[in-house]
Structure formats: C-alpha cells, structure tokens
Length: 340
Image 1: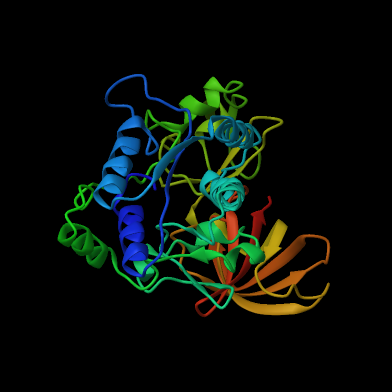
Image 2: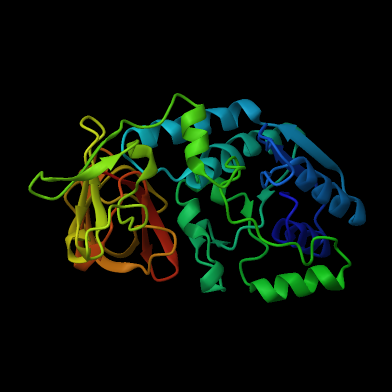
C-alpha cells in the first residue's frame, strides 16, 4: 500500500472478495529537505495508507527497505553517468515489490501478493489492463513467471474513474488524492540532484553535430537523454539529442529525422512465455518507453540473454537504459534493456 487511491481500492476489493488482507507500506528511507519536497513513499503517504488500513480494519505494517532502495538509487545515478536513461520503476517492481515483498509474504504465510497496478494476471500470464491509458505492464515485464501464479491485480478490469468512485463510496480518505507521477526517491523534482548526490554528475563536454563539429558546451551528460529537445543550444531549427558518449562527454545533436531507427538491440531479456530458441523469429508489438504506442516488429533472440529487434517502420528515440517490452495483443511476452 503506497498511500494512494489505487492500492487503497485494491485492498478494499480483496476484502470484498473474501480475502484476509494485510497492508504493507515500503519505506524507501528518502525524505525531502523542505515541506515542498516529498517522496511518494513519504511519511505522509505512510500515514494515508495506515488510515485506509484502519478504515478497513486490516493489519498494517511499514517495512524498512531503505538499504534496498539505496541500491536502486546508486544504479540510477551510475546509469546517467554512463550516458544512459534508467528506468528505476521496472527494477523496483522486479527486485522489491515482486522480490523482497514475496519473501515477506512467505514469511507471514500469505497465499499471494497484490498491488494496485493496472494490469491483469490470467492463468499465470501477464495481460494488459482494461484501461489502456493506465496500463502499467511496461513496468512489470521483469516479474518471475512463478510469481505471477501468486499475484493479484484487483484493478485490472477497472478504469481510474471507477477506482475513485469505489474509494469515495467506501469513504476512503484517498479517494481524491492526486496521483504521484514522479520517481519516488526524486523529492526535489530534479533527478540530477540524486545523481550528483550519489557520486557526482556526468562528464562535462561538447554538443556536436554528426560530423563532430562543436555546437556548444554543457556541464554534464547526466542532464541529457536521447530524444531530448529542451535545454539545447539555439541552432535556428529544432534539434534533438541523438546519442551521448560518456567517455568524451560529447552529446550529438540532430534534426528530428535523425532520431529514427529501424533496429534496436536489447540485453537482459526476460521472457514471461516459453523462450524462443536462438535464431527463432518472434512477431510482436514492442514498446520502447512507457507511453510509446507499441510498434510491430520481429524479435530474434541469441539464446544468451540478448536479442535484435527489427521494426516494420522506423521508431524515434530508442534510448539506452530504457526497457523494450514485447506484446502479442494483450499478452506480455517479455522484455529487455535497450543498448546503444
């Protein structure tokens, strides 16, 4: 339970289905420096979750995962220094919510783990949510297949307005609570504060064009991501970040059409269905970021945890460090981590 409306209604629905529910709040050990700086796992969120648990007369525990979150934060900072754009929410789900939390569930004898994600688990397979606009399966591809057998997503067949209406009807204090869309440990609103507090920012260097001509200077590569337009030198026409070189500090800028790619490479591929053999082609729809419209593609795995994705039509801003997630209709086949 995060202290938001989604996990609150997930608990409510599970109770209505006859389950004995235990609420768990995951403390990340991060606190803002001022009242304006807060984490979505803040003390106030813990209080909101506890109030809902009390309203539902269910046991509630706040569990300290500060050390585990610190590992995620170190990885987050290191990725930016490597010129990559990390996605900590995928790793949090994989390692904490469906890793450490499952071990906690086993310790207390719980039959399943449930979350407020907009997704569905059907016959041991991960499926997209009914509310396409809220679907969160992109962040869940790293779950172990065995865990899906003991995972419940009570909101999978609901829309966000329906969830808020259920919360209001039940008198839950989180019914109108605004959504938190930021990374939970970025309390200031600027992710670079986290990067620079955990080992310093990325290497300073040059903005360059594809021919290596200098277009300006920057203070650190951690301030940029592939596809970015804002914060770049004024060049008369819009330019975008095409690539980032962590060794030289060069950030290459191109016109919009320079972002298009027909091929992508992924490592750390994790399958939620039976893995295809090496060299076998798999037709799928592929998302290269959370809000990307899945694009038709052919995936060929090498049998050693990597794969090549060839898109039917070129895709813009394929970003190293982000996830590429494979779909077949509403089924999530798996995914991997994009490379340069």
